[in-house]
Length: 192
Figure (tube, helix red, strand yellow):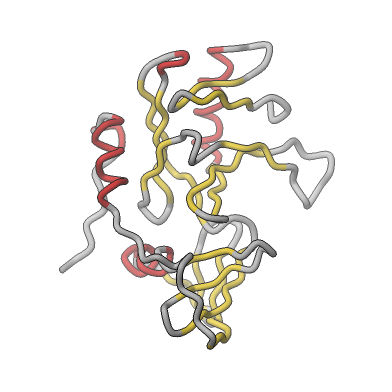
């Protein structure tokens, strides 16, 4: 069966996006504790591209399949996990990129949904918070927002999504850029 990405977020309501997100059944990688481990020879670059043994993986269905097997330990080591084996994978920054944003409502009634480069859909809420992280490459750079996807896995916001989110935050609170989603308050202060 060929891979069919979900429709564009702009064509969906937040309720429809939440339903699609809930329908995605992921393997229970957090429960699997395989004894065998090795190197996958895979790498996810800071811009969200996937590579295996030096060659780029360009098929969206493969990226989606591999991303469903991702896990990150408390020490920051990322793995591709099956019940029988775990394979280390290099992740330069965050394993996902938030590539599309959908906003519905205003103020404390606002709901924000994001599509990741893996085509996963995430609603910004208490279980999927937005946090500001300092950049390790340069102390003079402002912190950037990251979205918690699941477990210890995070998504970095793409530049267009970041600008769209910043515009929403500034329109709601110019003095201290922040916004609501899923009944939670998220501050972008310090990033703008």
